[in-house]
Length: 167
Image (tube, rainbow, N blue to C red; front, side, top):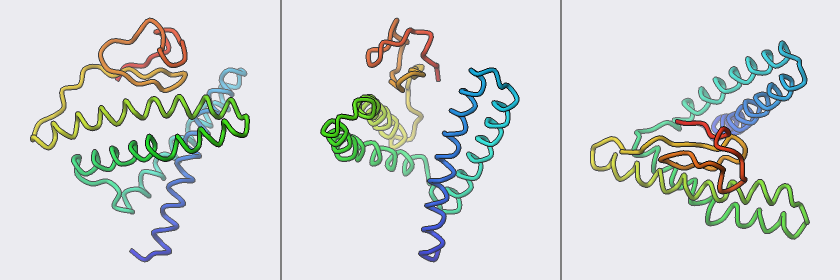
């Protein structure tokens, strides 16, 4: 693929991915404010943007074998843990941006769990079998991820058990 086209696809993937998430959040806000049809419109647009992002990723040959996808996921989580979030958290701290610092610190802690779960899955796939991962629970308030049983309250943000979604 030519460099300019690849760059454009990468930029489009980033933009469509951001729009997908923004529109999901906009839909939730519209629903909270009683605008059910506006919420539905944002959800539809969010789904569409997700489809666009997925197609761009495929066009970039960004979906490989499961083992390769896991290796890439481990690399991404490792970068976030070792480089990205520590630097970003420090900047937010120096600039007195407590909300950003809190959001990024919570994400940083979650990435550690993701990395470990991906490593567990990679070991299994490399051995030619599926990973034996019990139910995975994610806190809908902060993203804390764990397997096994959902706690009575989130150890990261204190949200109640009902905030956890099971996967």
